[in-house]
Length: 152
View (tube, rainbow, N blue to C red):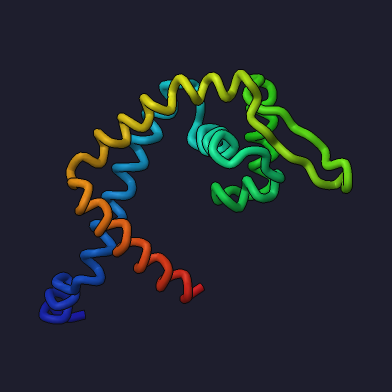
């Protein structure tokens, strides 16, 4: 690649967008994960509890799909949360092969306590944009993601 071609590519908005989105995503994720660990939960445990808190009882395979986790990993996470007393596991009466997870009273109490603090931290982390800019960013990034998803 000659120097002129390199300069043209360096100015390409596609490359710049990818780099900026990647760096911003990494920074935002790192800050959010740091906040989650304050509560003694790793990000997948927090995500699982948050899903159950907001959506109710879920089949284990659906939890993995919703928080983008492999089925073997979700079993490990559910086992850990069950040991901590933060969720309960149930077997479906109609099909013994299907297991559900539901947030326990202890888990609900924990989320009731920590979620407002976590939400405030997310507000602080994203304070670089006002609400209107956040809505615009949501629409643009969603559009970009949906289009990119078609390439799979």
